[in-house]
Every structure is written in C-alpha cells, then in structure tokens.
Image (cartoon, rainbow, N blue to C red; front, side, top):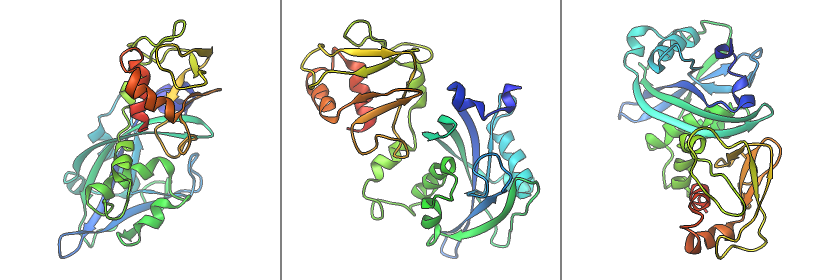
Length: 289
C-alpha cells in the first residue's frame, strides 16, 4: 500500500527515487536545438497544469530505473520501444525541496534521448495535456517560471549544463549550482552527529538522530565550548536556494524548529575547531560557506 503512496515520503522523511527522460532534437550542425516539455493535466494531485519534463515517473522497489523508463515513456508520451532503446543514462540528480507537504529528499535517474526531427510525442493517458518543443533560445524562461514543476527543474537544468547550453559564460555561480544538483543525501541520512553535553560526536550510522540541535553560542567558538539546545524533531540540511536561509546564515530545516550556523561561525570553525567539531565543520563545507 505504501509503495503506491509516494505522497507520504515527505511526511515520513523517506528518500524518494524517480526517473526522468529529456527528449531533444539536434540541428544540422549537431547542436541541441530544442527540448520537448509536457504540460501536466489539470487534475493531477501535485503541480496541476504546470510544465514538466517530457517523461517522468516515480520508482518503487518492484521496478528498475530502466523498466520505469520504458513504462513511463510509453504511457505518457507514446514513445515506441525502438526509440526508448536509444536513451542514454546520464547519471542522477539529487536535491532537497520544500512544499506545503513537507521537505522532499529526491534522487532522480536521468536519461537523455535524441529524437528524430519529425517525431512528435502524443498523449496516451490522462496525466498529460500536451507537449511542446521548446528551442534552446527560449528554454530558460520556461525553466525559471513559477509554472514549471519545481522538482523537475533540477533535471532540466542538469541537462542544459551537461550540453553546454548553461555554462560559465551565462551563469556566474555555475560551480555552486552544479554542486547543488548533486546534494549528498546519503551522507545526510547516515552521518548525523549526536550532541551529549556541549560537544559534537559522530558520525552516526543509520537514520537521523531523533533530536534537533540549535547552535546557541553568541560568538564564534574558539574551542569545543559551544552549547546546544534540544527539541524532539529531526534535522534536515538545507542546500537548496528554494529553501529558507539561502541568503543569510547557513540553516538546517526540519519539522518545527531550526539548527542555524552563522557564516562567521563556519569561518572560525574552519580555522580553529576542525578536529573537535569535525561534523559541524563538514556541514559548513556542505553549505558552501
């Protein structure tokens, strides 16, 4: 029952996996000229009526990523098997997002498919309204629009970076953006520190410690003298610009309260407390401060 209710993953803190297929066409020079997008049906329970990647679907433990790819490509876009066989695995994208349903830890298997210029995807179920081939010159307004599905945007951005459409000449902070498309979710799930008295110990193996810590020293620590206060929720790192705290102190989101590390605390930690508070130092590094 739970396998089919992926909507519960954010509520329960479960990491979700999915498959995305980016269909594209090339011009005579061999460059990527356009990307196929779909418009989601208005009756979809999540992100209704929004633009989305050409094909996408969630995974359960009963199907592999390739099996989900073939299934969703046929169901959503009527792509025949002989074309799907040409799809190339392009790794994965991992990220954290927040919605009114909670915090989502997503890992998406990514596939690229070069399609013939005369191929047109067609609707094969009630989840899609239609498809549009968007030129690379016009793709960015779609990607940046609030009408583009938030959890699909990282996949499209990853495609544009890998194919050189988004590059260091068009985006100043390209390295930071690229890192955020590959958030180390496995590390966060397996290596939460615990906080007995006033010092960090860990990392812990297994799931996040069921305790939230708030860094409460008023000044940047010069030793292991920092103190922490606790409450009964688990912590989730914030490495996404879509989450709160992106422009101020590095912050960690959870259900009820926050664990904040001021930027100057991280700077001090890098120079003075790397050994005694190694886990906090690692979080500082992961936050990019």
